[in-house]
Amino acid sequence: MLPESTTGRRWFEISGQLLVIYSVVVFYLEAELVSRGAAQAASSFWVWNERLLLTLFCGEYLFRWKHARNRLRYPFTLLAFIDLVAIVPSLVGLTVGLRSLKFVRLLPLLWMMKLYRYDDALQHVMHGFRRVRRELGVVGFVAGIVVIASSTAMYELEREAQPEKFGHLSDALWWSFVTLTTVGYGDIYPITAPGRVVAIGTMLVGIGVLGTFISLVGSSFLTSMRDGDSRDVADSTPLPIPQPQPAPQYRRAG
Image (cartoon, rainbow, N blue to C red):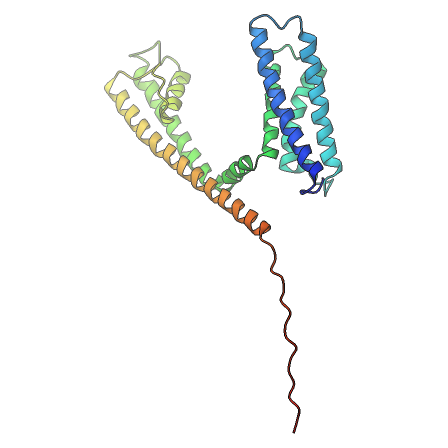
């Protein structure tokens, strides 16, 4: 890759960011015009625009691979994987002719993942998640147990009282997720006394799980950003200039 301090490298990175932003803006513009029925006449423009963007993104990927320090290892790095995930689905959608499907039309949004390469803050976020991945695994395990237990209990306690709302276990699972995350849409809720007791326990546990998650991730983010700032300061600190030492003095014998 180009050296970090070169003007060409800086403009190359800026161009990549602008290209990603342009692709997202065009995607939303097309979606808005399609919803109004005003994009049918210019359908070929959207297709060729997406092909052009894919060509540029593929060229960027190959350029980075060619100038990588270790070409054999580069495709297996995180940044290269993100670039590949952002390119391949849209490329398949255009090649096979599946662009008319609604799900395939959402694939260009994956290009936003490429912003991870250009933004140090996003890299700190990912590094923060990796730093506490084991602790987050424990929190996720506890949350999963609570969801299974509370949804099963709520299904058994409320299905006879509210068959239209808790008639299926999936309805109880939806309620459990919404309650545990403290969102509380209010579309379904218990009306029996035992069900309300289960709901209170689920809400209390949800507050604890959410608070633990936020504290873990927040402290990890701060540590990652401070480490990054410390490295930047260390890299920008000039090396001390060695001072000349005086010549040693020798005494004459006798």
